[in-house]
Image 1 (tube, rainbow, N blue to C red):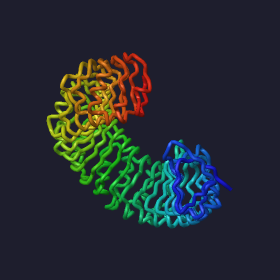
Image 2 (image 1 turned 60 degrees about the horizontal axis):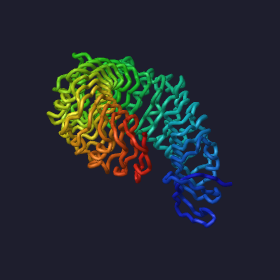
Image 3 (image 1 turned 180 degrees about the horizontal axis):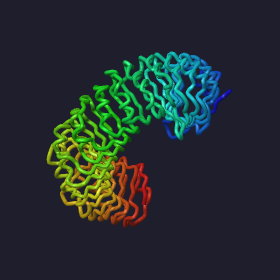
Image 4 (image 1 turned 60 degrees about the vertical axis):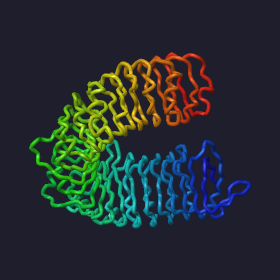
Length: 571
């Protein structure tokens, strides 16, 4: 029996190479991966691979074919990785013969059918990952026989349904467990028929990561959460999309329990929490949280007389896709933790920013996402005292201020030295582009889809550290001054399409190449009024994308213009 495979590279351990092909006499490892542009054909006689212990085919494209059943004949195999292989069909029953297997990864494929219950016979298995496939049916109780299992991931499958088997409680060595119900009215459920429902969870004393997503009746089972709270080593808990609500929190008010002091990450996203009650509950059960995710709930503005809560170690807080309107939430957050480094309030209904005083309280804040809200007015004073701020995203809002005024507020304080990413796209910002060189750390600047107009003033310069600049889809015009490119030595991506820039293309390229010749990878200049002929672009050592369509370019484009480059042009 032989296997014909197409692959690009093959690493072998203890191999012999014969003149008529590949002779694997005592191979113990075989790793295949794409590492060149050409393919070679290798014929491997399976009978010569009986000593193989390590087999890694990850990212090899099987083009939708099934897992070859002959893998089951590799009886000495300890490690099998078939992740991200575009595999289809069912998990072959022949894999049950791999009695020495310790590691099995079939994730990120298109495997369908049920999870074979005979996988529970692989008594040496320590790692089993079946996530992101099309598996359906129930979770076989036989998986509870895998007494050595430390990692189990069954999440992101379209059809898993039924009760989570209590036999999983026998996996006393399990450290990470990821379970998720299916889609289209197929749900996993917990056993809540008995007051002691979920008792099996208390046996998993080694568990550090527990993800139970889309469990349809978890909101009716207080005992389950109490069992979770008793896990002594739990560091990360996700109860995403489980229908949890304020009512559920009220039902727990009489229950006296605390999560382990080791719990640092809590994901309660895509539930139905609507009030500040969730903050109080979380602060009462685990004061050591570092990350809290409440994305996609129904939370509205918090009343000013709400009792404050404290999560002093909180570093990352995600509140996007809720219904916040006012910035009372900022006062809450400031009181809750002064150590916050990331705050996501995107996709809410925020309209008015608070006074800039909160910046003093949130002195550690590094990443602030306010995108997709309804912010307007002179709001940039609010960011003036955020001296640690590295990333500010306020795209898709209603700002109409002059760009020069915005940069005046941002540059007049310590933010000018810390800011690395600034996203202002898709607002109604007016004016033209001023001198930006005062921002000493800025790496990414997006000003696209605004109402910028006029010429870029002579003397305006880019920041020294800038790598990405987009001003596309405005009404900027005129020739770009030579000074603008003086500091562009790290610029990798430049997007200036859909404006009214003019001038000679050869002059623009000459000025740009003086500093960016060794950094520029993408150049978008389409839909402007640039004229002249196409210059030699080989001066840019790493240029890959060049768009110049819908301008006033004349002459003939030839290979000469792209010599020694990897450029893809759009003329």
